[in-house]
Length: 452
Figure (cartoon, rainbow, N blue to C red):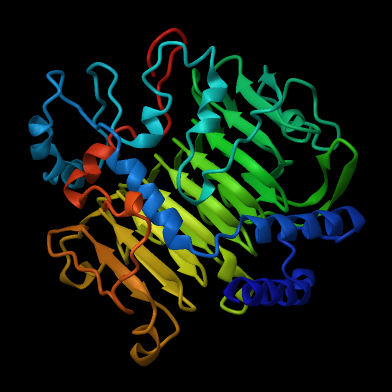
């Protein structure tokens, strides 16, 4: 009954609002109409009627992962680091120089394997959370980006990133060397692609960002995205067979619009004109993990409009990320859907950490929150556009979070009483271990032939 109602609401709302919310599409032609309809079907198929099953499944995976930083296999030496405020005082990431260690279940799946470069596609089996079915370019060939130019957005040159992302079918996109790629226009991707920056320092910077619009099954891993600016519109090729007129881009680092099965992992992001990551207009089945976010105002926006009830189908996991130096708000800021925020390390905010409107469900588990020194900034949460009489019914729960320096999370709604299948009953790792689990957040310095 609930699924049928959600599908009906989504279909009606999408049909009503798409003409007015086209995310930079200047002319909504037959190609984009077809993409929108296909994306809607994928969204409905990707929606999980009982999202807490996926939440508890994630917890089961976390608790079955051996997370060990000491050479002798003893975790005791890490407890001091886990409970310290060192990150808050330095506002940086201290580089780990010991032997390869994994600290969360996603990394355990692939990282400390010497042959990772010869078996890159193993990564496609490692996603967890709502984006766990994302495989990207697993079923396609490897495409090697050999140059960083982006001079022709209508006829991209072979060997460029823009040429790679518009090709038909699945592709696993890697890079031949370190690159600084300045995108002249937004990079419009097609479905079933992996952008894999491991092995080199890949920067998308000082130009436009990445657009994931009305597509499915995309992995973005191991790249650095920063200093993204708004760019002018015009004709841009968005597939081998089609181009269209786009309006000006907003300057988002990664924009997800009407898309499903998206996994963003080990990405370092900062200083974008608009948001670091935006997911809107019916996007769902998304995991944002192992990433490092710094120096930005509006970090992550999940649901852009209080009027678009189609985002009731939005389901997002935010896990193992470090929200660090120079962040202000939206870590994330949520509307309508279901959001699992688990084992992240929050060491800086200037307004709030987690916010929302339009009755989103937010389950915060095992995060560490270190509040700023100012007394008026201690609250982790912020609710917009609703009186307490309304938001007190929203389900916002804090479970095993670690609150430091006076931080506090205002809960609302009824406590969770659901008893899922026995194997899902283990809770997430406690917030005291969040620093450990996010130690390697951000793009990694991987080298071929060595453990990453």
